[in-house]
Every structure is written in structure tokens, then in C-alpha cells.
Amino acid sequence: MADETRRERKKLQTRQLLVDTALRLFAEQGYEQTTIAQITQAADVAKKTFFNHFPTKEDVLFADTGQYVEAAVEVIRERAPREHVSDVLLEIYERVFARRLAEGPLAGAGKDLKRLDDTVMKLPAVQAKALHVMSDLQQTIAGALLNAYPGVLDPVTAAAAVGSLMGAAQAAGTASLRQGPSMEEYLVSIRRALDVALQGLRSL
Image (tube, rainbow, N blue to C red; front, side, top):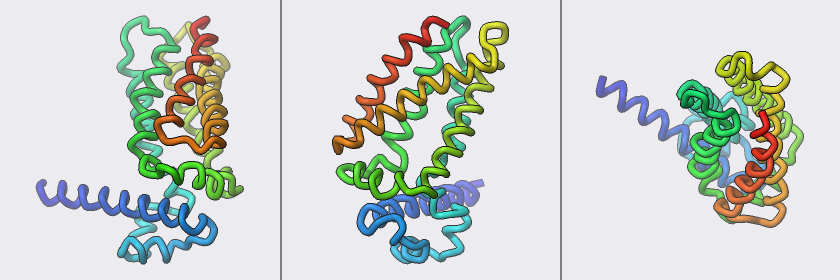
């Protein structure tokens, strides 16, 4: 058991090293100019190790998304009796997604946050991956809400509730990035957008 725990810890450390190294290289020399071979060389791991963790280079930018989707669904399962849909969605943001932004792959980007967005997130391949990830995320959360609120939500309303909150966060985040914010400023902007969206959601 101890050996198993040690191996798992080592695996997670290697995964994080690859993410940190890749983001650093993306910011320094550009996403398209950075190869998987360069990432593995800088991280001092074998190329095979990279593919054990990530199928493609794009996947590095969305590391551990599945883990956060599971955490979001868990928030819905653990909701208090009669807790309002808007409060559950806000709790998902604060407990899961704000934490991912503050502690996840982009947490250490600092002054490179805008540069990463300009040079990486606007690339067609990355945007396509982001749209796919966002669509799956919204569908999963909407489905969990629908199951949690039978007779209160229908499929369209559940999808609209999740979409309105995530759409507000995405739009505000994009506007904030144009100003070259710190991570703290970026999170504040998103939280302000959620307050606007929640005013409408409280009518559900």
C-alpha cells in the first residue's frame, strides 16, 4: 500500500511538472513553436511519459478537467435540502472552478496570463478543444441538476441555467484578459459577472 501511494504521488508530481514546463515554454516561445520533445527534454522525462499523461499537446492546457467535473457533480449531490439552483451553481464555481483557476495549471502564470491567452487560447486547435471541453462540462452539470431537481427543472431550463452562468464567466474573463490582469483581478472580474447572471437565475 505504501509503495502504491508513493507511485501515485510520483505520477501526480510528474504530471504537474509536465504542465508547468509546457506552460512556461508556451509563454516564452509560443505554443506552435513548442514541441512535445522540447517539453519532455526541459522536464527531463521520456517522451513516452508525456503520452502516458496527455494524448496531445492541447490536453496539457486542460489537465485534470475530469477531476473538476466530478467535483462539480459532487457539490450538486451534497446540496442542502431545498437549496436554490442559483446557490448550488455559485457553490460549484467557488468550490471547484475558482479553486481550479487559483490552484490549477494557470495559477503560476502571473504576468504571462494575458500572453498565454493571446498566443495560445486564440489558436484554432486550442479553441476547438476548449469548446469541446466546455460543451461536455455544461452537459454533465446540467444533467446532474436535472436529476437533482425533478419537477422543478426541465432539460432546457437546466441547460440554460448552467449556460448563463458559464457564459457570463467566459465573457467577463475574456474582457478582463484584454487588460492584462493578475490572477486575483481576473477572478474578481469573473465573480462580478456571476453576480449579474445570478440575478436572473434566482427567478427559477
